[in-house]
Image: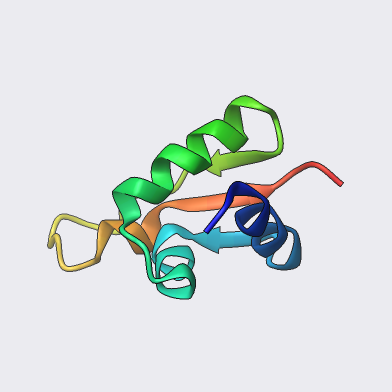
Length: 72
């Protein structure tokens, strides 16, 4: 997967969780974070602030990590 494919995915799905992105590209979430960080530093996406749902720790953290496409 190249950065351009990730950008196209995010253009098509303006808000996506890290879990959704990882599943789509069949990639490790930690590896994807590096590419997402690069896109964020270029101002093309932003990481959305999400609230923790509680203290049970049952939710997969990657489902709570959301990214939004901001550049047309």
